[in-house]
Structures are given as structure tokens and as C-alpha cells.
Image (cartoon, rainbow, N blue to C red):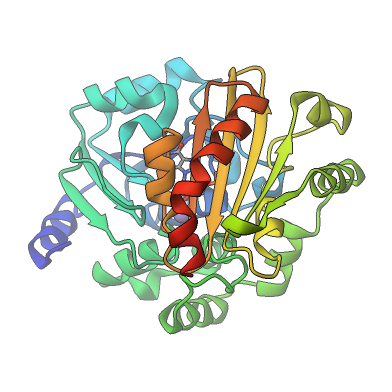
Length: 339
Ligand code: 5GP
Ligand code: MN
């Protein structure tokens, strides 16, 4: 983002605007935290601001400041579409290709609003008038902090904004342990705590709200864990039947893929989750070091993301998807064993 871009955006936001903020489908902590962080910032001015998510998000995010104002496009479709069609500005956060907004893709593409992208994924599409795209950032929340700073408004960050941004930095960095966490991330987090983010309480509210069934599902996933030592790979499967047994709710499988990566000598971990309703297998991939799961997912599983964390999908059965994965791996043995 150039100084000219910043000046333009300052000018744009200098008078009241109709603004819509959108995260990717199946929003996670960073998606919800960044959109609501930006929402709580923009609300300080005379703008009309609405966060519209493509679909619902996990219950453990349903306490963030102003979360109760969020529209879900798949439930409130008409109302959401009218807002998008009439918007002056649309911020797209934590994604960089319109298809990642699911069923909102068309209405977003057709909207004449000025689009501003804030995102930290690889290979951005070219749909936004202004792009703040940086893969070195831990999270979109960290970028929203920089964005507010670039606009000269860091003094406007209050407890609500700080809380939202803290959530996304915490979740996208795996509580500040993934390699995307930099000293600058820690500096920002320190500032957010100074601005009123209650770090211990936030961690508790996001991570310590497990249900008994969610832990049982984790147990099931761990007993399904398999390793392929020659490829330094671990993978987990969860069938729809297993999800049903443990009364699966959105968010219950988040983070499970990381258990595979915690094994000694493992540098690639995957989880394959059957979704009968959507007719797909949802795939999450994680890696250590230089092995790019973003490229791996783009090449084989219609997905993408970051070097060390990516998602994708498959239209094959669960068994055949795993079969495909296992059959591809030998091509990567050299790269995986060089880590
Ligand atoms: P997760 O495995 O937690 O769903 O996603 C890991 C990372 O990859 C996140 O940053 C997410 O935004 C991205 N991601 C997940 N699924 C997809 C996908 O289908 N396509 C792309 N391009 N990125 C994805
Ligand atoms: Mn993110």
C-alpha cells in the first residue's frame, strides 16, 4: 500500500460512507476478529458500517465486541445483497480471491463499490482498487492494526478494537508460537494489552469453552491418526458418521490438524473431514519449514493459503481422497526429507 493509496483512503473516509466489511467463508478467529476490529474503528466516525459474513462461525467467537451486529449472508441474503449493492466501500478481509466468499462471490464482483483488500495470503487476485497484501504478516488482525496506524489513528484504538484484534492474532499464530509470529507481532500485542485487551480472559473465552463431546471427537480423531514416516507425514480422518456420533458443531475440529505436526520428525500434517451436506472432503494442511502446503494444496486439492497452513477440498470419497494424498506423497519425499 503506497502513501498515495493511504492519502486516497483518508480522503475517502473523510466524509460519511456506506461501508460493508466481508471476511472469507467459514470465518475463523482472524476473519471475525479483523472484520469486527475494523468495524469498531470505522464506527467511531459517521459511517454506516456492516459486517457481512458468507456464513456462520463458531460459538467461541460469539462474544466479540459488536458481534451481535453481524449479518450472515446465507441467512439474511436479501438484506445483505442490498447493502452490498448500495455500498460506497467494501473491505474484503482475510482472503484475496472472491470465490473464497462462497455464495457472495457474484454480488461482490458485480458491486460498483470501491474495494479495499487487507490480507496476508499468497497470490492475491486483482479485484480491489486498493490492496494491502502482505504474506509476512501473522494475521489480518495485525494488518488492521497497521492500517489504523497508517491512517494516523492508533490513538483511537480502544478496548473493543484491541480485543477483536487480539483474538485474530492469537488464533492465527497458534497463541504466538507459529513461525509467522515476529517480534513486531509481540510489540503490537503488547500495545493491544495496554489498550485494554484482557489477554488471559480472551484466551479463556476462545479456548476453554470445550464441550465434553468436542473432546470425545478429538479422542476419535487422535485414534484415527496415521503416520507415513518415509514422507515425514501424519494424517487424520473424520467421517460424517464420526462427526454425527459426537454431535459435531462448527469449530469443533479447529486445531486438530496441529496434533499431527506435534509428532517428532513429522513436517507435514493433514486432516480430511467428510462433509456430506456439501458433498466434499474438507482438507486442512500444515507444515514445518520450507515445505509449502499452499503450493501443494493449489496443485492437488483446489485450495491454497500460506506456506505452513493451507486448506483445500476434494470431491472424491473420504477413502479415495486419502488414497490420492498417499499416492502423491512420494513425489515430495525429497522435499519433505530435506526439512
Ligand atoms: P484451515 O485449514 O484452518 O481451514 O485454513 C488454513 C489457511 O488456509 C487459512 O489461512 C485459510 O484462509 C486458508 N484456506 C483454507 N481453505 C482454503 C481454500 O479452500 N482455498 C484457499 N485459497 N485458502 C484456503
Ligand atoms: Mn488469517
